[in-house]
Length: 394
Ligand SMILES: [Zn+2]
Image (tube, rainbow, N blue to C red):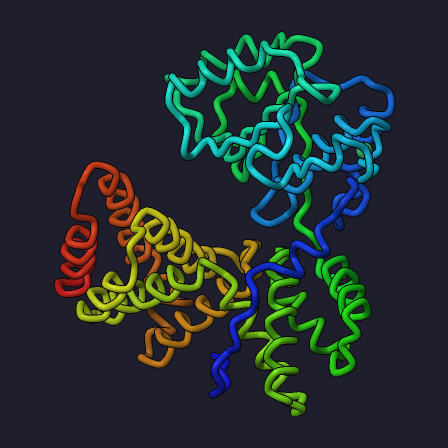
């Protein structure tokens, strides 16, 4: 575990470098050259599909690319020139351009929302070349709402383009998926993130920065470029504001700043406590862990994922091939250490005998995850079910 430096982190203006260094054209987006080449090629040939489906992990640039597609298509020169009337209307602000609508499906997943958008898709553009509707989190389109999208997606008017984005294409309803041209986005490599950070460090004339510090941030960001830029800005405020010169300390600050930028940290922390509580027969730890969170479905998902990791560790000879962000890695290591410290290593982590126990816990977690959707007191459910498991054994 990394110790937090004992200095208060100066609060950075949220996301100001992330805004300042936001890509202005499709080719400015880092780490997605193949996807960008494909999309730009279609725009240049004026041969667009009726709908794009952008899919890839969190932070790989789906929203940025969707907005830049809209900017490029509605630019007078099809180049996101930045100076024409359409480009000047800021696409990143709600209602910035009348022909671009960005919808978070998580907030608007009902049938009425879908019908409203379908009606809107029939209207022609007001200022730009096309009307573009961007459905973010598209896997959250509900079964009842899906039929309303089918015809508009399949046969939109010539002046209409849909862009869908999702982290989870497998959850997207098949009839919707089959109507879209799929564009896979890669996790952004550490090298690409590093190059971006180097560029910003140069522009901002950060004389105290060296490659090691930037590498720490790039590595810890787990492919999430915006987090890495925000982290660099925080470190800069902190180092420059506090006159810090010690390189080891700056490195620690860099690592901590990326973890504090990761919203998963609280959930990971709670999940670590709860799983350790189960395997160490410590119901109190489970109650403590559950007391830390307000959002229980992500917690249940994380519990299942971490437990699956433990299963993978003992059932595969090589190390499991799961993508872990820096925050995930940190908490996974903490969980393993907690278990090993109590001599659980032979039983839980490595031993053949423990597979039954792990599977048993997994089964409880999966049921718990299902039940959580229908029960209004999730904390009680988690502490009761898992606490009893820890108390009575598996
Ligand atoms: Zn323009």
